[in-house]
Every structure is written in C-alpha cells, then in structure tokens.
Length: 371
Image (cartoon, rainbow, N blue to C red; front, side, top):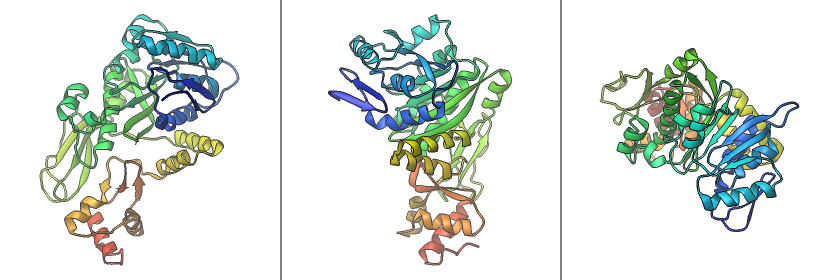
C-alpha cells in the first residue's frame, strides 16, 4: 500500500512494510476490549510484530495504553516504524530486534502483548510468556489457516502437536487448536488462559485472552483441552475433554468418527468482551463491526456446528436455509443459532438425527417433521 493510510485516529505510511486494511476489524475489537483511557496509570504494551506500528499507535491514542514498546526485526521497515511513531506524536520505544531475543533478555513485564506475525504463532508463544504476568492481556493472530485447518496436516502435527480436521468444521477446530497450543505453552509458566473472545474472520484466527497466574489456573486451562469428533456417515458431532481421545465410534450411527485435537473446548467468548465490542461499534458507527458483534453475541458458545449443505447433499434436498432449520429446532425446544464460522452452519444442542428431521420437515414445507 502506497501513501498515507488512516485508521481510527492514526495515520501511517507503509513504506516497505505490509499493512492489511482488512485487519482493521481485529484491531478495533482489541481496542474495544482494552477500553478507553482511565485516570491514573495506564497499561504497558508490547507490540511484538509492529511493522508500520498502526496497531500500537492506535492503542496509544485510543485506549487505556499509555506506554508501548514496538519490536520490528526488518531493518528497512524499522526506519519507517520510527517515522510513523514520530508523526503521530506518541512517545514509545522501538527496537530493531526479534521477539525471541527481546523476551529472553528483558526483565520488563507487560499488561498487553499483541502478537500478529506473518503466518503462525507457534515460534513465539513460549517467549511471549516470559514477559506476561497475572492479569495481562494476550491478543494473538494466526494467518496459517492452511496448517491449522488441515490442508497441511503434517505441518499441524509438527508445529502445533495437534491433528487438524480438514472438512467444513476446520475453521472452528483450527481456532481451537491454536488456543489449545497457547494453553499448553502458557501452562509451562504456571499461567492459565481466560479466553475473552476467539474468532475466525477473513482467513485468520484471532484470540483475545487474559492471563491467570498460578498452578491451579494452569491446571484448569489444561482441563479445558480435549478432542472434537465428526461422523462422515450421519453428520454427528461431539467432543470430549481429556488428552486421550475416547470416542472411536459414532454415538448415533455406530460408524467410525474422525478425531481432531488436542484442542480447546472451553468458552470462546465472555459477556463483558461482547458488550465492550458492541458498545464500541455503536459509538464508532461501524456497521460491519456492529454486524459481527451481533452475530458473535447471538452465537451459542458450544463446540462445533452442523453444516446444513452437507446434510441436504446426502438427503438429495436443495434450498433449505439455516434460518428455517434453526426456527424448526427452536420450536421443538432445542437451542440453535447461526455461527460466525460458516454462514451455512448452525450451532445447536440437537442431535444429527434432530437436524436431519428438521431439514426434511423444512423441505416438505412444514418445518415440523421431527419425531
């Protein structure tokens, strides 16, 4: 991107750095969760992958952050970073060094660490843990969707020590593998992870978490790990906590299920985070952010979802909308919602048999063929 780029209250020149305007949404959400400036001491931040500095600069101007250290390993990009910090009138330290070198040599601890690398987070989480403390925010982005979603299965096994699921559920299982990896790395430092919001958007996985300190917190987080299961035969989904998979056969049709994990089976959102994002969206007038926050707010916070076209294809049925299936399930007293992971998916407490019956009923025009 050439010329000046404006986002929020910050203006930067990209120079030789990469800047992704589509990532504005995830920067907005981070600022919303951290909240506005408060009286007294502000937050101390590490922008671990600074590039143009747009992320850290925005936090300094728009949020409770009042002290930021920027890291940028590329020398050509680093000079532009310094110019952007200066032109925005913010006071900050900028270092031309790697995440690993900085985190292994400093005694500083940060209230917020932003990690937005090119690719995966796996080379950095262990080192980032060295500069966290209880109560710190840790926000991370992974853009290695091909790895986490199973297109590169062996790479996921090697880098995240987890088996991916390469099907329609891959975006959710990929995000949960990412969080599970974070939980395992942080536990080595007696840190637990409190997920404020986890989401998939525009080909990247994004996690907003808060760190909890202590052996009990670390053990609690590890207790949220487990495996996800999918039945290719009937479409059933299930999950089980624990680091040893226990579901070999489908609980509905008896077929062998495919497994993915270990991965995070804990919550993917908190009420406070959703409320903060919703309030920020209303105040800023950003209709896209408001739409995303509404979808996240209404989404059931349970593992996995049903992909409706996968069911209709097996049934030889066309033209059944997720809206109609959700309405039919809710009418029968079952919980159901849309999911941000897939516009054609639904989250529900229903069984695969319930979903199949609902689809048949909708196709027949009654929406009530469930038994």
